[in-house]
Length: 340
Image 1 (cartoon, rainbow, N blue to C red):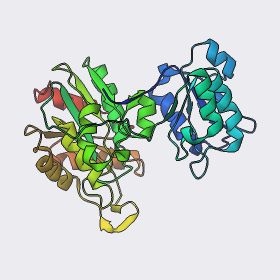
Image 2 (cartoon, helix red, strand yellow):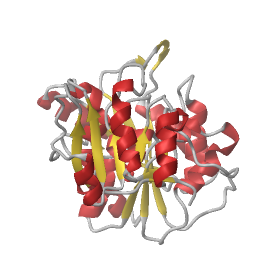
Image 3 (tube, rainbow, N blue to C red):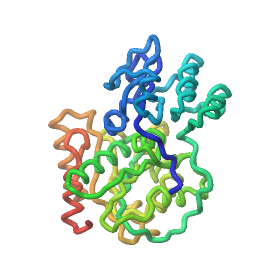
Image 4 (cartoon, helix red, strand yellow):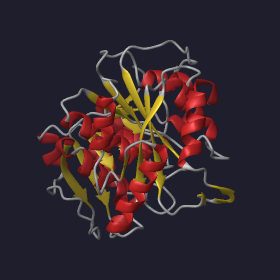
């Protein structure tokens, strides 16, 4: 499979970050893939603690750490000069360096030379694998669930991870398939769909979710929204290439317009379901919506409960908040519908 693959276990590098908001990737890795995380490494002045034991580079190398993952982002998405001594030392020890920032690791001469000396890999997560193919539309064995959104940043990755977890708890085989840089770091493999040349997006989605056992679920992280004026092309290619049997609509309670495009009204959940069914049937006539995942963090608990109940009554599907209620209702619905 032509995906980016990371070597575990991980050493989470939080640099000199002093505020948690700059270390979302690091916190996400610890929350969702704690078993892959060995320790954390900070620089002088750094106070962020992602909840892992402190570890030096020598300790990391001797304990078999495979990748140093940059779990924080400096303003502007660059690699600060003050980080380079540490990153070069890690590469000299043969530890892969992984980043999803705008600066390309392979464009830093000092770091590139260190990697050449040791054989360490410099992995720019936002660079897709080479030689991706055009989509074939061929039906693949295995089952697939795609998270789709009313907009960007409505919880598609979080919902997909929560659904994978719920499938495992129900005793079902499932794999989270990452299509964005943070998701790839969490999963340890994936393809940054938004960085793929347009002609190859559906082919990349096919490579992301290859042939599998008939009862195995790939839970595919969605991107953008098919209603988005800027990113709908990525969403469309991912939908067609994924060929999902099931999809879950992700939404944020209270949002009224496309984020950053204030002249575009947010589509309703019903509209997203209807259009996704029309487009998805192109490669999988059996596609169906199995639930709605809503970020209700702006609502009080009692308001959230009422909101989800009203939405569920309207669309006739289980509606959950993955943080407040979990996603087990959606898995129960899948089983009740005989989709396993």
